[in-house]
Amino acid sequence: MRIKPMHLAIVAATTAVFSASTAVAAPASKGIIQRVKDPGTGLEIRVQQDRPGAVSIEIGDQAVKVRRELTTDRLVTTVTTAGEKVSLTIDKSGLSVTSPRGRVRVTPAHPEAGAAVVRLLSHSPAVRRAAELLGRVDLGFGSPTGQTLLLTRAFLLSIAGERDEALAAVRTARAMLQTPHFATVRSGPGDCWDAYVREAIAAYMEFEDCMKGLAWYDVLGKTACATIYDLRAMGAFSWWVSCVGLRGGETL
Amino acid sequence: MRAVAVVVQLLISLVVAASLMPVLLVSLPDTQGRAVGPAVAIGIAALTFAVVRIVWPRHKG
Image (cartoon, rainbow over all chains, first blue to last red; front, side, top):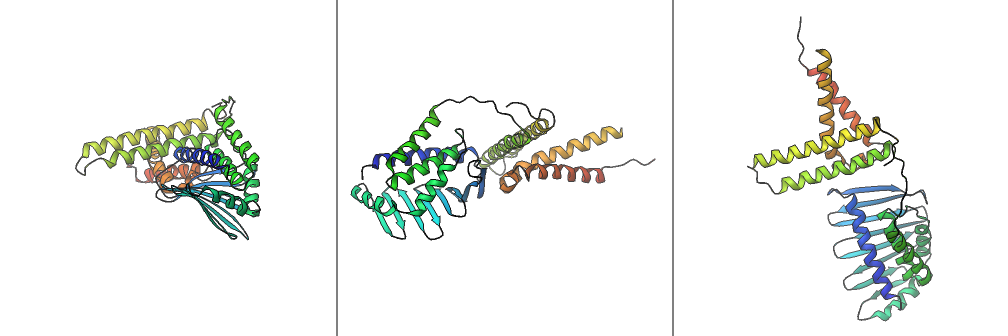
């Protein structure tokens, strides 16, 4: 399979962007940690933590659902339609592809199996629908979630043998990351709330980290942690009240 | 004097809401939404204000 170096590049880039995406809004709790409504498709994209150490990103409509899960040792991409489920798992030993038509494993020792992967997925309606759906996603250049989905599309296209389209998607992603953009952004009450949520969650995370290292009898330390948390939480809350009530509509 | 008490009660309710909100945002991710979160924050502040008003000591005569 000639596109193997490109696979590696796409996977590495996806992992990096995915990590950044989850680090932006990543409280330590389980469940949904980010919800984004995509203007391109009108669909909701969800970033969630189903269990400790596993973060997934999911988008889907009535025809197809695409899910990408990142754990400490593997990246699993799952494409599901009514009649087909394709699963692509990348771990340190290689790439495994499972579809209703069969199962193929590509390892560094047997790279020639890549051709079988292309044969398996090149006529897959599920992969084609997923690539088409991801191609309509329009979260903009500043969104790590959008970058993740764009690279997911490039990965699916490359693995289905659509080399030119995959390269085009990778070039788009690279251009988005490298080109500086200047834009005037009008902020509204919702933007104030989003900024407040980020700060409030960061304050609570800092409080948890602060308390973790303290012994049970360290009352002064705990008081200091609580005081810092309270000041930060009150600062964030009063900023939100001020943002909504006093200077709404200002340019960020 | 009464106006000062109301301002203090209002401040207390805002401080309580401010301290509780980060915990809620982390433990109940649904409150992070633009539709739910602000309503919860204002609800907590309003509820606390009502409770503080009720338990606030009053001087008779």
